[in-house]
Image (tube, rainbow over all chains, first blue to last red; front, side, top):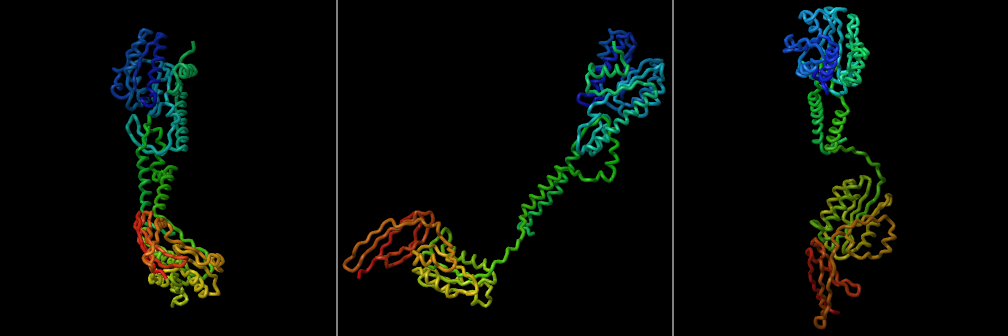
Length: 208
Length: 292
């Protein structure tokens, strides 16, 4: 999530702030569970339940204190969410790029509707959606540090876009089968003008 | 195709170096990605036979082309193109051997230049040509004729006669030499005359020269050294039977030369002498002439 210029984490934090504030303003009980490698693998680093708009500043401070890095399998995290017995049901908003995520159908089966309503906010950077590179590159994975040399041509980029679209279609189909809301949000857009309308279209938030 | 500098082809070694530099650059080009899995479909390209293909880019091809062209240019390739064979001819070479031909021109003499010009004409001759070599000074002399040689096409041997010619005669028997050459002409061949001289004499009969029946080509030597003059001349009687003539000759040039000073009275040459003139100097000379 720390990849990109500006990084996807900026959009993720802004979105978390927005959705968190809406929940607090709606007098909902709000928990924030960071998903990642240590120290976030431990639930003690989750934000304790908050109520009311008065807690918005605390939410903001907490989010600003998070740091992004390492490798995350969101499917495994979702599967463990129920085991933690944090709640018996509710709305789960997942903000992630879903990179490195394996099969989502099993963890989503552990959060069945209607007790759970799961919303996936899939964040992808414009350079991930359509890379603007050409030539031979040694590609370095920012999360794992793994390196590989690949030739990148116009044909390769076309194949890349096709495979990325197929991967997104597969996630969307899994979500649809599990009655999970899925929305893909490019991180290039502004929260107010592009991301919020998209969330309204997906009925994640209601228009006043 | 032959190469005048074959060692220049060693520059072709640079082509693999260019290729290696491109491969090295390709290795150094790095791109940080958020997740390598997005590109994993390219593993088939990198592990298959196509992964070993050279990175054929326009810039690589351009670099290789420039390298190859520079190497070829360094090796100086040449192509021998056969020239169309010209028709045979009889060349008559007339070489000036007067005293003025001993004048120096830089590090050489006019006569050395004249011999070089004659040798060049001999080199240009083909086996079907006939060449007659004459000199003219006090009198005209037949030096050599290719038809008199054992091998009539051996112009190298004919050029050897040039080394035996003596220079330093008084007079300019050009008309006699032209006539002698005319008598030696092969009637079956077109003739061509080459006069190699410094031109340091008046033409005996300009009209005859201009109306000469055969092509006459002039090869001038030593022209760039012409920068001398008689700056003073005085004649005074010495007794009843002798006249003293004083002359001062100056060389305004930057090269030392030998010039021929000719004393003539009423158009008749009385005396002729070669005078050394150092660069930027003037030299006096005195003639004692008996009166008749």
